[in-house]
Figure (tube, rainbow, N blue to C red):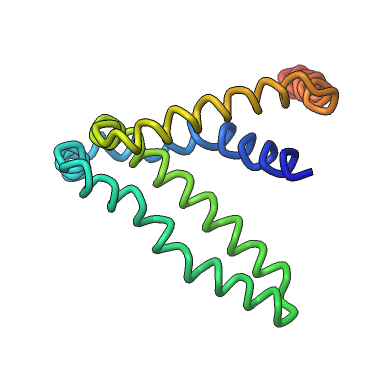
Length: 150
């Protein structure tokens, strides 16, 4: 069961990661944003790590507030806050990883954990992609796209 929950979370990250990162990357056409990203790319490894961790720390109060809302009978609003925070967090973290990955991989312990994560995620995604629900969802998705195109 835990592996299924993790697979769903990873699938969300995979489906959201690239499109959200690409959306945030559009800001780099704006000269001040280009300068900001250039300075992020020049950060030393531990400063890059601190910046990479910042969105998780900054979004934690929002997630706690969302849980408080859920606990006080405002479930829809609480879930909405979590979904919005997760989406924004994923977009920012995806872009930050793209910008800081070379510096972060200079840290041997980070490179080791990153490689282990990628191996585990690749194996889990292969298992997820071969599952019946996934294949069925893909068939439905393709059929809906064809209907939409018509």
